[in-house]
Amino acid sequence: MKKIKSAKKSVFKKIFIKICRLFGYEIIDQSNFSIPTLNKSINEQLSVKGEKSINLPLGEVKITRKVKSLHIIIRTCSSVNMLTQSKERIFEKEKIEYSIKSINSILRGVKYAKKFVGDSFFKIYLVDHNSSEKNLKRIKDKFKEYSSEFKIFNLNLNDFDKKIKKINEKKEKVTLNQISNMSNIYKSLELSKASTSDLFYFVEDDYIHEENALLEMILTYERISSQIKNEIIICPSDYPYLYSKTENTQVYLGERYHWRKVNETLCTFLTSKSIIEKHWDKLIKMCEFEHYPFEKPLHEIYEKELCISPIPSIATHFTNVNSIFGLSPNINWKRLWDEN
Image (cartoon, rainbow, N blue to C red; front, side, top):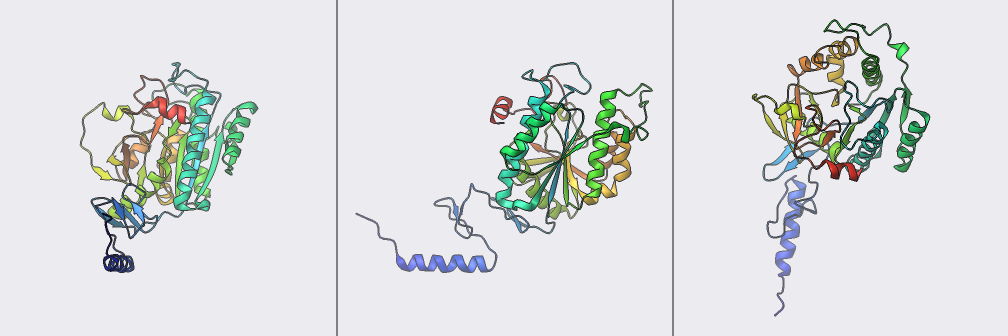
């Protein structure tokens, strides 16, 4: 026999849903895993950018720190395989292949995030050093494929020659590759200082991202900054060297990932304009003098500001398989490589 739904019950339910929406409450229908007030399934993206972060079963966090824009600054150098090592990267391809896949993963992430944050939210810059015309064409073609606008800056090492000390902390001569790297970071920081964007993502061209990585960072930034009432720094990679020693940490719940407090990262990170301005001298110091570790000034910033890293990783550093600064643990590297 066909079961007849009660019209009276259906009308009451619709009225109740409207009242809940009016007062900003969400209701969950456990029978079919839906949230009628949002017209969404429980497994869909529930948070509303700039308004509320929803994570079941913990409920809602009101967003008081709204992210207005994100500028992505990609540092490219397809002519150098590895900065400080002679080893081959995993899959043993030419460096340009990692650059293309890294850029592709970022553009996929931008396309995915735009559905939630809008078309004008992102701007992308490339600071390139010494890539061939052939490789630059491949990079430009990748942006055309996604119909994404970008601006490329060809790095001139002479602009930074007098700013970078040629003898490092070990009293050794700084290599040309490292001078290129320091100059590239310097230029990236200068671009951020000249820009009016809210957040900046500084990223090297050998990090391959999950499709939801950018959106996860944006929504997690809003959520955790609103909770602690302060700006933060986000590193998207779960580095293997973070497991080389036992130390106390703090665990935070992001949009869809767990995040932990870390005291060290490499030079791929996302943060706010205000953090950059507040710690400008230390950031620039990292570019002017080769410390050991290289990121020492960055780590000194983490003593005063919260830096978090995801578990599992949302962006993997594709270096040598044995590098403690490379491949994130418990990640399907082949899947990530093939998808991009």
